[in-house]
Every structure is written in structure tokens, then in C-alpha cells.
Image 1 (cartoon, rainbow, N blue to C red):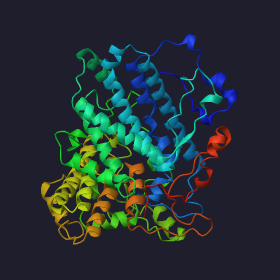
Image 2 (image 1 turned 30 degrees about the vertical axis):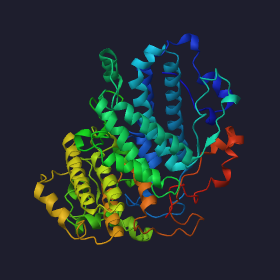
Image 3 (image 1 turned 180 degrees about the horizontal axis):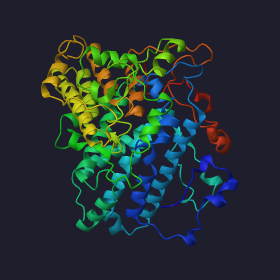
Length: 517
């Protein structure tokens, strides 16, 4: 795996010490580079201390109102460390992807054909990571980024220009459609398949799962841009083709299809050991009153598996009121009165997987698409399936845990799920308008994704605009949650000329092209 750093975030003087002498390292291969590329991204996928405490704790967890916290001045301004660290991880991963492209392109034509499955899988995963980065920042350096190795160390010639967010989406959707069709007919050499299975950290070489991942990612991205005028017609057509042809375009349909990086051995780097401190430190695992209240009012069977009562709450589930003053919030948190994310199920579950896409998310996307197209009956089926898959998933995650910190919980019964789906505040039949049905779907996305899929949840919160009330911070200009992240300060210093082309829109208040609310 090539030891590369982001060209746009390093000083020139750093390069001599940052790059290994090519004459002193062994040559990489497609198989090894594929695994190395995946491995570089793990900090953003597997629950880690770095990701949860440094990046998510005071940014997306707040903006999604997935947690409760004590209100303070400046809470809606993402910290520079959070922005810079996540940016660096993405571009380190991008550099590894470029190195994979370079190695692959150097192969003879016959070998390129044999190793094609590696490149398809790598691009699907890379596009998932890219979509998340675009949804945070908007325009980013992309098509010309990570070219330092390809350009033989020409630093100035490798400073990347910016690509418009909508253009990046267009390219990715084009490629994903092409790959979806290719995966439907591809035949992988048995010998190559052995190496693919050994090096694939995500789907363990299961070509069918990569096919489902590809189409599910298409569905997510098409829904994300479906209300943007330049994409609406395309989104309508392609979403219909995916949902109407499950044989030709299979998606993640059940929890057995979920695309996750699973933890198998705690003695390897692929583990969730840092989830505990990342989520729990500085009370980062407190629940929010709106989410807890909704789950209590509807007798949500996920309540006891996702949350646990505060240590001094006498078994009661209560969340932090986001509209309260700090003087009222602080005593409840410090006094152990606030429900927290269930430690055994989540934060102290060292086997909790790194979630990329799952059946509940895909079902809710389908439910939304079908609702908007007027197919209410099919939307109801997808909606109820999403709830069922979500409930079952969290009990399955609980079963993975070897921790016993939180009290044992009652086993789930099918009757509970059936009763929950029929309750007035949950029932699809009880919603008489499109807006009401979309509101139900968004509420389920919010509960399901919570602190587990924060980047995707923030995109859905901005796109679908659920009714969440936030305390107004009048002490700073950013009085409410932002609608995007700004770019890291390193871009203004080390990629100055290219940054100047996007600087006018580099504001917390500049909406992304798909955010039309």
C-alpha cells in the first residue's frame, strides 16, 4: 500500500519525510492495494474513538438531534479539528484508490479483464465515501485529486482543481448504472475469485452482495437528488427501473444482505474497541427528549435495546430537552436522570459492525419513492418492512455483544412489532396525505439511523426537513445548525488558487444543490 498524503493538505517541506523511497518498498498488487484502500478508510466506518469523539460528538450528533447535550455558545459551528480530520481520512483513502487505479492500468489487457471485479468493487465503495464527503462540503477536489504518484511527484502540477457537487453526482450515477449492468453478466475467474474473497474486507468476495450494494447506493443517491430540477426526470426513471426490476437490479432486501464491515477478531485492527470512549466520554451518549418521547409514546420495541435508563432514573426513560437552558439540562445529566444509548448494545459492544448500507435504510428509501409516485399500497409494504428490519437489526446487534454492563432486556416478540406498526403515530394507513406519509418515513429514518449512521442521517434531515426544534444561540452568527460544513483551512493555504474558485460559497449557510427546503 503506497504511503501517500493529501497533496492539498501538506507543506512542501513535508514531502521528503512523508514519502517512502520507491526503490526501497516492494511493488504492490491489485489484491493488496484493494485491501489497503479499504483499510485506509476504516476510521470513518468502524466505530472508533477518533470518529465519534473528535468528529461526530459536537457536530452531526447535535445537528441530527440524535443525542442530548448541554447547550453552549458556538455549538452550531463545526470545529476545525473535526473538519480537518475527516477531510484527511477521505483524501488519504482517495490517494490509495488512485494508486489502485495506477497499478490496474499498468496490467496487460488480459489481466485487466481478470481483475475487473476488484475495480468495480473499489469504485462502488469509493463512490459511497465520496457521496458522503460531497454531502458534507459540496464542491470538492475530486477528478484531479490524488494524482501526485501518478504525476511522478510533480507537486505543483498535482494541486487539484474543484469539481462541482452536482457534476460529481452525475459522474457517479453514470458509472454506478454502468457497473450495475456489468455486474449482472460478469464472470469472475475462479482463481481471481479466491484472491478477491481473501482481500475484500467488506463483502468477503460475495459478488451478489456487491451487486446489491451498487444498486442500493444508486437508489440512495437518486433519492438524494430527486427534487433537484436537473436530476428529477432521471431520478424518476432510474428509481422506477430499480424498484420495478428486482431481478435485474437487486438491492439490499433483508438484514442478511446488509453491507457492513464486520468485527470477527478483537486482536485485529478491525474492531470497535474505541466505540466506548468515543460515544460515552463527556456524556456524548445522552438521549434527546424528542426521540425518547416518541419511542415511549408509541411503545417502540427498539426503546429498550437502543437506550437504557439513567443510572439514577429508577427505570424511567427521559431525554435532554434541546430547548431548555443549560442550567436546567446540566443537573439532570450529572444527576444520572437522563437515558443513554444502551452500552451493551452499542458503545461497549466491541463487535458492533461498521455500517455502510442496510435493509431498513433501503426499504425506507423505497417507501419514500413509492409514496412520491402515488403507489401508496406498495409504499406501505416497504415502510413496514423497513421498521421490521430495523427492529430485528438492533436485536441482532445486541446478540453480538459480549458485554453485560446494561441490564438484560426482554426478548423481542413478533406481536410487539405488529402492534407498534399499527399504532396511530406510526401507522401508514392513518396518514391521509403525502406529506404525512413522508413525515412518518423520516421519523423512522431518524430513529433507525440515530448515532449509527450520522452522515446519512444529516443528509436526510436537511433534505426532508423534519420538525426538530433547536435552541437559538444568539451569542454568535450561526444561531441554528448549519446546512453544510466549510472546507478545511488547509485548502486556503496549500491549494490557494483552486480554493479561490469556490471560496464565495464556502459558508455554513450555503445549501447543497439537492437541499431545496
